[in-house]
Length: 285
Length: 219
Image: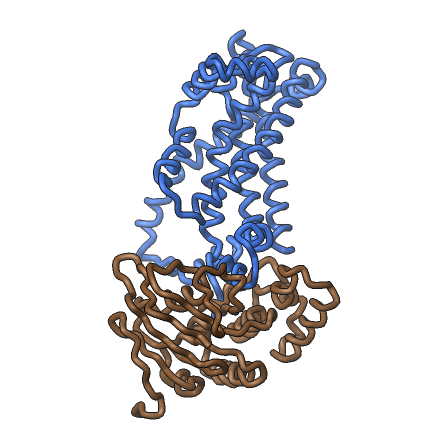
């Protein structure tokens, strides 16, 4: 039977691969167990930091995160800014990833390398770069109309700089999985390149938008370095949850910092689960 | 009619040069050759998916060298079917007419007609996932034929099929050609397939096309 790799959903592909795995035999156990012990160090650490937070958090303080207007502001601003950042990131990531995977053009390798810069650059340096960019004449001109430095647009831009790079990489992986012959068939059937994109390629890539959005959202949520430098840490203005944790730690309020961290943790888990459910729903369609 | 006049195509490290090919209207031509010899490249050139270094390509007496793929009147059935995973079988059969903005009624009628013709009416609401190899190729053929192309290009369409389905598909393609008198260019490795289908067989070897008579092949 001709089953085609690109028709498999990721979980089915796993299943398919699992069928070809070697059986676990007694003689192999010492080897496998030693590998497992090495990996376990990391797993224990991950579970450990989650457990420590949950263990040390004082429940009334979690309540305060939602009742105190200052904290509530940070939670809301985090949620809203991350959502806006995610949408913006996808808007850029989809066309960028399509061009990078489906079009040959001069300077492509250079562009590919540039797209990696936000991933490898230290976050603080990105923030500093943004700060300087908006001091230049063109930057200052834009600021006459929309204020970026130490303002909410700046916060979103700071998050976007990093999130978008991850979303683009994720979308590139999705486009690369789509069979290029589909696009070829579409143009022979009368599609222009843009029609083939809208009617065939983009619907195929829709599945890939969920992981791209998830990673963009998660990155935006955790972004702190560029936010600190470019958007500042003003309470009730550009304060997001990571900022709150930073500010509370600075004044030695470990309890409140932990409470906010737990709220961040739960929010991220909820988003992760929602995205997964949405992804599965999309595959059923 | 498919005509290659002195066609040259760059193919990564090597090039196909001065290719001449003539396939009369309404005939079934089979193109054979080793993997990597450039068969698919020739087929893509006919469809307008690959630029020529030199030469002209004419389809049905019309020079299509500079026409985009959609205006050449070709239908393409790629090796793996390359079905659109997000669309139903009915969407596939209606695709060519939908792109041409034909009225809904006409599209529906054409979808029904194709589904009956290819024996895939029961598949209409399904998506490609889970279709058998033979079913996939029927859908791919239907999608390619929907816009009444003059030329049908098939790139190793049966390479992934089992023996039994293989025989069915050969019968189906014969019928497709008899009913529509479409001019076919069919790429295959399989000699039996070439003998069963080809009015004439062209073999591409070391960049040169040679016409062979399948009746003279040793069994």
